[in-house]
Image (cartoon, rainbow, N blue to C red; front, side, top):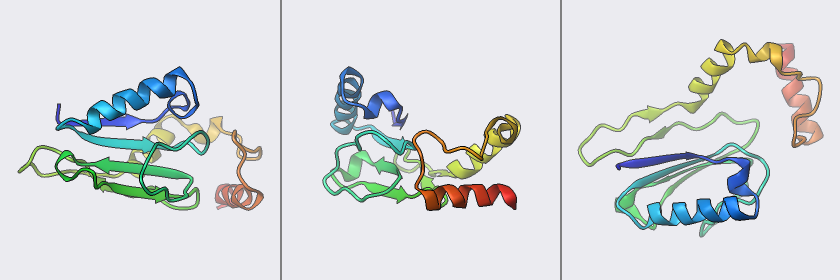
Length: 141
């Protein structure tokens, strides 16, 4: 296995058996020759363990096996675009740019989520008043 891509779920971030299982799996990957890409698009729950915690709503961690313990951390907040990152592959392979914003935009459009999501009510978990007003203003454009 070259790269493990994990999209965190609420179960991974809440205390309990699910988190313990995920942290065990994560440690196995981090102690192997496999790269890890960890995508956290959840605003609640416990952040994953890191040496330096940078406060943000969301995070993408790219941990390259050959550079550990160093890793690339892409923190971002609700009003910011999701950062693009290179997907680690085998040495010598050209690494593709992952544009997660574009992927999610296409899913949103194809699933017609603009008809399914009521932007006049707070999401769960709730945003700050100013962030909620900002989200609502996007729908008015």
